[in-house]
Length: 52
Image (cartoon, rainbow, N blue to C red; front, side):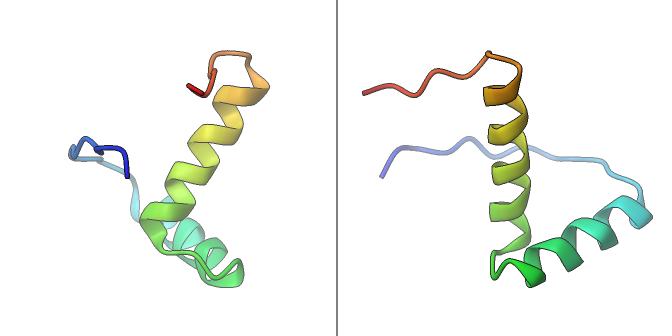
């Protein structure tokens, strides 16, 4: 498993609640949901190339 970098994320409570609800709806952890959202946004912008 690749190493993951930990960092502090400041986010407003309303946005966090929405992400937590979305994560529950998709059977993911909140952290997993945030990673998923970020990876989708990076792919859509053409800024994420997965290493093979």
